[in-house]
Amino acid sequence: QVQLVESGGGLVQAGGSLRLSCAASGRTFYTYIMGWFRQAPGKEREFVGAISRTGGSTYYADSVKGRFTISRDNAKNTVFLQTTSLKPEDTAVYYCAASTYYSPSPVRSNYEYWGQGTQVTVSS
Image (tube, rainbow, N blue to C red; front, top):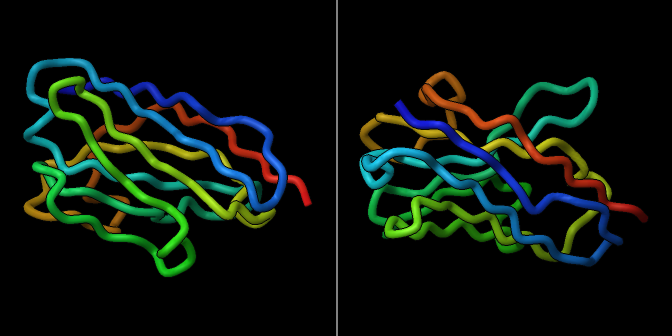
């Protein structure tokens, strides 16, 4: 089992950047696919991106491709989401999630463990 804690959210102007972090407990962090999802008020939780166990491959939603970057540091049990060129429509609670699936996946049900989320608000 793994516990996840996100941080780094906040209020930023459109065009700005934030770096979100997700710290994981336990000694088996490297065995998990890690993903980021987000949920805006009144909307379904949606996939943002995911990263393989080694960090060698990443997968992004079209809406964030070219603006967001996922990375991980297995020595520090942490996964990151670097966001740039933020838009008001990026406003949401951002969640990290861990999966034992065989490859990075955009499917929410493939992720067994979730953090509590961190709020990102982008003002216009």
